Length: 508
Image (cartoon, rainbow, N blue to C red; front, top):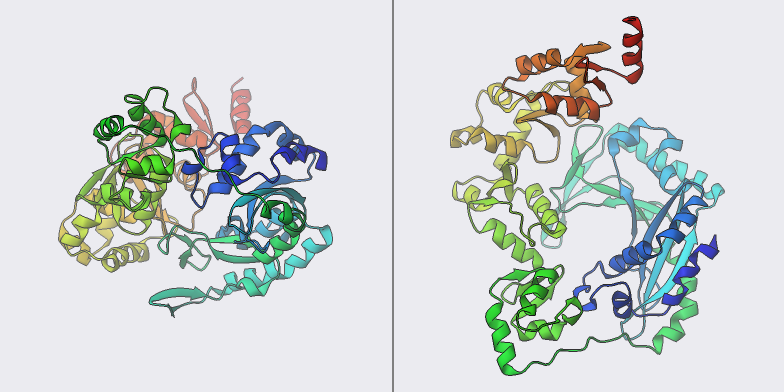
């Protein structure tokens, strides 16, 4: 299968900045930690045909990972395989496990980059690797060890870490196996997932050990290090502007932040022909801005993270808008982090109450978490609840004294964790987070094991159980997404296509 990798030959020993230009990325805009990942994605997209042929000739799936080696040729980081679903982990056997799927049934394409003695990053080439079959079986004992810990209940305790306190657990660490380990894969400590014993834990991932990856790809570094040590990566050419044009451009740039695309449009008004390739670090800084991927910011902002935090958290409430800045995936990721850290609470779609308002009211994270725990403790494990039903369950809770609208309490419970939620039309329903497929579980509960049911009967059952109103179209969509069959002419829901056909034949 090596012949499919010849498409990468032309890029070998090119610097990351030069490669950025080659694949359509401005190198000054591609200076984040994701630099080599961004290049890899572009290379894969450019040579999709070769990748598809490689995938078709691989046994099982193909996983593509960029690897960054330091000046000594050692991998700078562990390589993540996938996020772990602990509920599925204990519910499946060895041959259906995440470990077997990730390593026994996967061929890896490592896109390898390495640093020269000057610190410039160069592309070293691709490495195709699959774990030998006899090595796969040796991982079973590790899988069994983790499975036993999950079934017995994960132990967690707090421990000092520098000036902070962290939560440790007894899942096996990196030293437990030469090849793989389990470690956090989360936005922050509040980004949690459920364990089989009902506890929550910071989201965890399955990772390949950095040393193990180094052993796989190190030959590339040894073969190329002499060549890259005699090279320097390219530099961007700065645009020289006279003082009048520079001042005119400064006067045009009124926004605090731009995406590269909106920055180009603003500059075009003064410099015809200006494009993304015209953006450089020196040019941007001469205008009083800085490049902080993925934005171009006024210099008063340290980075893109602090900018998004500022515009979201500076008022008591924040409404998400369809702007180039907020529509960027980076903003969505930042919003997710703020939600998981209790810095914002969604009270309507795309509308949030912020920590500024919560702090002013004296509401602490401990109070919010205590409210969620109290609600969870009163929920039956197999039942959906509306927010009204949950509020009625609580005889008294300190948070209720604040007299928030029910939308705020819904927002508190919607944060990921032990309580799962499902939006149906205008209704939000809550259930124990141990339930996996909440959509199907809801429809199953409404149909109660019958092969078929009129859609208006399902709707009546929903309304009588949860109150309020639900659009028939929303209910139909939910049924179809849950694997049920809906017939428009009969206006009936069937638990399968086979049940539908049997019903039709029985009427003839």
